[in-house]
Length: 639
Image (cartoon, rainbow, N blue to C red; front, side):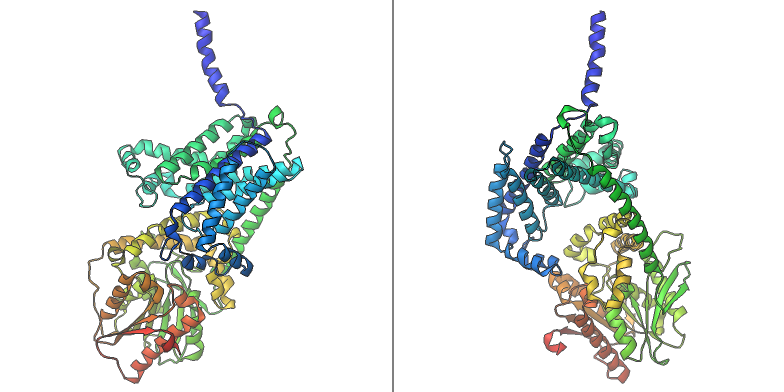
């Protein structure tokens, strides 16, 4: 009996010892495991692209004629190099070669050629990244990181250099989980456990069976979501107590990625992220263990020192950008609305006291400076007054309303701005881009005869999600993007942002101010709030636009918008037709995109010319016919 008891009591202790003990992996074995898992990712990737070659053709998901826009503003040498490898034949040949090299990398061995193979796979993956922009979901980037580091570690002769490269990947692994977890923790949907249900019901990453299980087992689903959150936030625990938690942490992470592969269709995740795990095990084992004897750990304190310095720099950068984003311009004024919101606006030109004032309303996640090319011309070359403003939450405008945000709040703010900032005897011309177009349309009904005219610039339409599949698909992930960016920026990652290409399209004097707003979490948070309200508001659309009597309307569409989504052109024409008893006109600007309509100087000047011509006809009394006019403003019209 005593012997049975001793055996029974020994079993749990052995299990605990096996689970909660270091996972000693030697340098060569860690290298071999990581490079093979990364090679499996590359092999899967290339085989997927080879079996989906039709996606590289015209109109396909990876049509190079469209995808090349993503590197249009990159280094000229890089652009040319990527363009060379992006021809269908070259791309196919590279993927066939990659498949052969990746297969060879799966074989046993330690020869130096394996380092060259890893470097080849990593370099070609980076080159083909812009060409195969869609479909990787980050897995190829992780494999590239592992391959470049392990390839270098195979070829450098110094053990210290090898360990520095392996530490680099291990630290990147910790950082990827840690940042992902803490960004999720800032979002209420992960804290309350509802995020998992939201992911599983999406078209792109969802799984019907898993979603049904979540709905049937809400408590278990919340526990699962919180477990994922805990795994990511606490991943560095693998290094505590001389690596005694390494086994359960890595096992949980591997299971997590296998689940991603099965339920979310992210098959490459099952090998890409686990490719970093052997290097985590190697660096987490105690140095006293024979398997890692002689390991050089100087990379760790060096990395921690750099991290501390980078954190201090990031904090300082965030403070400076917040000040720059909110301080306004020399022409800035502040007005408090009925909701208590403080709106910052720029009176860019007073103009002739007897002429109307242009009031410019920006789009979603857009600044008032997006109108720079248009507002500069209106201010300096015309007798009109010009006012640009930032909605509550953008730039220096602050939202102090205590009620749940609705679009009507922004409409009221715009009405109060007009009544408070424009002399009572002067009329206004309301100009709105994107969601700003919908706001000015609604504000017009409240302002009555104060409105001299309305200009819609590639405007939103309240029925767009019901009538346009393109709008539904495009908008599906926007809320998540806004949420992720606002959380990441709150963690200080704004210091890592680079200037997006479109900022360089603006006049030089505006670029730094706009970038400061773009890198500020407040604007992304405001955009998320507006997007959520817009979706709820548009879902309740009754199905018919109310008429606007006696107010001229000019609707300007971007050619790329209506070419990609013909339903948008029909809805834009409806906006013009809603203006009754006054001239209305629809214009399509050739070559313009939704944002370049404002940001590109040539296109913005065409827009300004059309706006001025429309209102000049009104001022001269040569009114257009009562019905809507349609115009295409293309190359000939521009001349």
